[in-house]
Length: 292
Image (cartoon, rainbow, N blue to C red):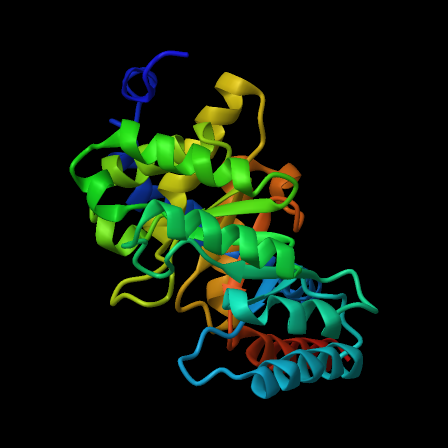
């Protein structure tokens, strides 16, 4: 295979800056208004990675977190969320709590949230999480290496992680708020996909700037170009600060606008969140009452 830097050079993000604001402020905003309905709100629930990543998490609190989720879904008569995402040491507790459902057990691993540790520890943590019951693993790209354009190093690391995560979904977090510019987000997306990511994800939720419509637009465009070149579909996960229903629908609309209806499934679209569910439940109730 060619060097990853040579492959990146064959892709084009040069016209994105001009398109992004025009499309987000114009076309997408109109489509968001049209998309505001109970059906799409319920769909957002089915695409959730319902998440707790608190410094205060314990075995008991995580057990309660899972039980509370299942109660809310039953009470709201909603479809199951896609996954519950936790720190890797809680994988077994979540897997046990979800055994009567089809909800996946997801973890953050590989030196989350900074990815600043020894490669051996990253791989070991991923392996241990999977052995404990994780079915999906979210890891963070080495952000500093993206900024310094050390793409071969990033590619090798992600390939090694992909190898130990064989048989489970691998989501690569780009930490887009720290990448700052379109080119860096675009290239980080492509390197992750070529290394075998099943999903590319915006953010950890642990930095000042997390998911933004602009970053999601760039990531969708990278997925689109990668799919056109390789025929391989890669999913997108929006995470970090997605706590309100209008935000979730805006991201859903961007994905639909750029990638199309084929991506509107939990196999290719996820929303990582700890607070969104309650707001969506409130909005669904409000929308239904207006219809009645």
